[in-house]
Image (tube, rainbow, N blue to C red; front, side, top):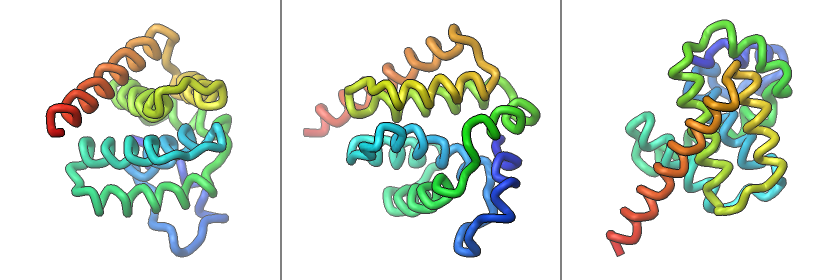
Length: 157
């Protein structure tokens, strides 16, 4: 899905980073959303880990390791404007909408709507070539997912 996004990294990326693929590229975008307000908190980290567990069938340790790699990749990732053209060229609509939904999950995971996070999600929406209606659909789906997770957690207690 996003494998071509990080080709620009090759010249500057650390040898310690793996070759980017669509999973890591999406993870780096999720980290970027979470870090955008300069308050990368536990709820956002847990949400990213849960997304990885759900999407990629990872256990908690594998998800945390993947997130750590994504955090390093995000530090070296190009600005959102650079993403724009690359994303639109090779990612189908459903994958772009799914990616936006997971970004909304992260942005809303701490229960606060911070302008910085909303701005990154909006930039991603534009870069992904999605409409405001698509963003609203993705946001509603993300809220529904968050509520389901919260209900399950309450039931488990």
